[in-house]
Image (cartoon, rainbow, N blue to C red; front, top):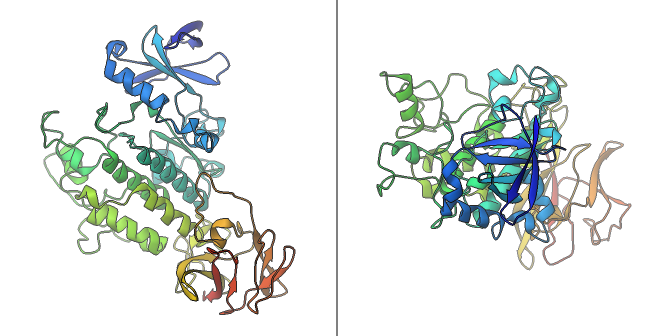
Length: 475
């Protein structure tokens, strides 16, 4: 090992440790800093240093398109992106980026020290090799999906596309429910910088895969963009919630070769394994299904893999996934079976159970708050649900008001919690200034409202304050 010094575009020295066989990907080789707090990644292509387009892309990514420089939410985005911090020009073109936090490397088991790429967790075969402590529970995968959708939403809102969104370019930590998007330096800026890569097999959009035989400049050739990101995002969410690929079923698309069969099955002839009318690619005994994820996600998966599989403009956007995942998060309930592999399920109604993973039913009816928003004075319409259980995450600003969303800038202070006390379910007020009982009395912090079926109460008297109607889902 030898300590070397690189030079950034603005003339600053950057130290790194040269090793004989550094970690390498398809485009770069990576060296750690002496204290391992950052990495220096050099492009394999030695012509990259003279590629004005590539350098301009890097300048744009580090400059005007950089969410980590946002004065309000920059620190938040630093946890969701491994965003480059500098461009290296000598000895060759490269980037400086933060090192991955320790939680994104396996801490125990046979893969100790390896990066936590998503395939280790989404593949049933590979999951079998992992220690229980590394696998995490199902609720953590929901949180991971929310964070991934939020990160991609942020890219798309800026006009960017990742172009190679896959399990390889997002590291996850299911033990804590965290994720980080990596390989940021290849982002696509539409109309300015074309993609460097085609994508990763299994995540490449069908229209891209189906036109790879065409010349690069052929107008019919499809290239990675925000729409292809939307396909890859849907695949990732499906894999992390159901632990299988949405297009890889038993159907044979070509008997000529395994390569052609896969090329057609993921490209021109791709067919959702849960297609509602064409079940020729459906594995036998398939469960759980998207229906078990509740109505918000079931609808988006239908749009992504039925309507939008071969019609890119019909695919749901990242912000739709983020919102649907957040709403479904509020429907999660702990499984009564201590040995359940998932430990959580979606209490989606009209009944709370049974758990799709193990078949266990809740021991009692599950309390739920039906949330409503006021569209006209005195006229309320349904606006989400919140399943109640002991030890839940409680009530927050985005539950109490219809104009608050739990995004990157949201105040995450808990405003109340639920408790089962002497056979009665209570909402204990911690920070709701204008919580009002069913009878119209103010309920100050430190006091509680009993959840009686049908006895509606106001969570907030603000103009956007919601009405809550308690009920119970039979088990």
